[in-house]
Length: 399
Ligand code: RM4
Ligand code: MN
Ligand code: MN
Image (cartoon, rainbow, N blue to C red; front, side):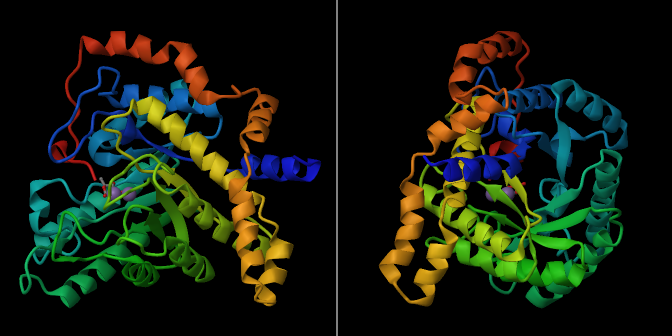
């Protein structure tokens, strides 16, 4: 590796930070069952401790996404404790994820619900979530809506769109400082006929209607098969509307598998689009990189560290693309030369230089190996085995 490539990778890794989800450390599964892991976290304290350990091993995960439903059930009363637990774990609260989907009242939707009383309930929860974000010093409110319908004719699609515009606007207007409202989309599940925020176009229009602090959140698993996700990313960048990501991989639907496990080239291509945009704009894009995964079979912490290491490698590979050569090849329609720019970088083994970067930062050169050597999982397994109560999310279903 030349000095120039090493410098590029070092530069890229210096900038790249990833947020881990608190819910990725608890017992979660599929709609068919949850295989309980004795080391899984069952309290917010345990989730934050595990997230802190991931940060200690990798050095790039200083924040943890919190779910109001699972981590801040006591609302304001929980703020001091959560803050203190995060301090102890050496991390900070990151994005705040309100619950617009799990309560019984949301059977027919939250912001899209035809019943004004339920919309008001969802509104109050949204506003309370912004208040929690403010108290915890969090920037992003990440909103995902399960809203939709299962049968044709059962819901007024345009009326629900209007309700969403109104409610998101109200939520948006309570944001302060540099806070942002992130609107996540998902094509189906739990709704199977129509979903109110089904794709990036709908999320974009709703975010625009909400106000200038709203952006789109791209969950990489929330697309139809074979959809070109990097094109969506490129378009959102060009519209200045890309707010962040939920990374995970998938083979079929919203599988929430570890990032890069099925199609690492896709995440590389996404990172490439971002890098080209940043190169053209002469500075970093304002993007929150977050993980949204559910590890049913792999060890929770192991899967999280593996995800971080994989994402870093793909980000570093994307930083190696020779943009001058690429631009020239594109301009001359030299297709194979242009394509090779991407493929050469993707094929480069960046692991040694990433290990060097980690060592230079005083981090373990191989975070997964450091995890295996640390005895951490064995220790928490013993500590947690006794007082285990299964943590069930989405009633056992996680998506
Ligand atoms: C959704 C989506 C959201 C997550 C919920 C629980 O599929 O990915 O980000 O909060 O699941
Ligand atoms: Mn998500
Ligand atoms: Mn999902």
